[in-house]
Image 1: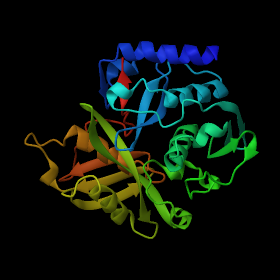
Image 2: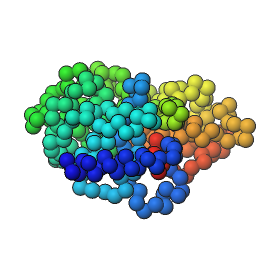
Image 3: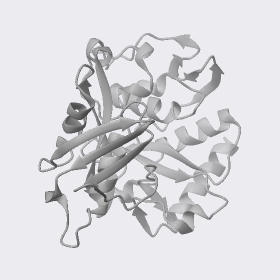
Length: 295
């Protein structure tokens, strides 16, 4: 309990000095040696799940870090920013174990207290499988294995990175027959702008060009895909010039949404955006920090 109080107190202190939520990590932040970003998930008033990057400042032992992240997702301290807890305040982590890339969370029965099991599974899976050595999440209640939660048809055996967030398809056969990707869109919540992902499925038999077209159509209907190529982990997309601004540059937010979304395709390590055969990317790397609370 003492550790929990310390964690929550730190969060409250941090939030007291929050100036704004910004979507991209700036150079000043990159130079900070005390940056250790991890993702937690909250929900907004529409019950959409919103991933938030929090600076934990330093790495701690895995079990403690898992407890800290879950404590944050139980907190209502971000409600002033339109973000609400996805987990019950009475949820307790009884134990955390990692074996053969499977992270087992042993929780008390308050895991089902909010009766929003699909969102809870997505939030826990999204946050707990972002470790490089974790491929699957396993949930126990009071030390006992479970097949599913009462209000979700997703079997616990499907709790992998592919589940994503804001996934509106619960049929497990569809999960395995198609390729899951995360499409990002901008949403203003309580005057703050966030990038929010939605999990969609693209046909695994479609060409890379067709998959790119499907993804980008969910971002902005007017995006024209002229050509697509993929080599050595780099996805290059040729787009129509109709998305250029008056200064002949691409809108920064649109660029981020395109890069974040296309980066969710399997094996894509970087994204190049070209218009009229000219590179219009304004950032060198496809890694875009988003929804980071700047202190």
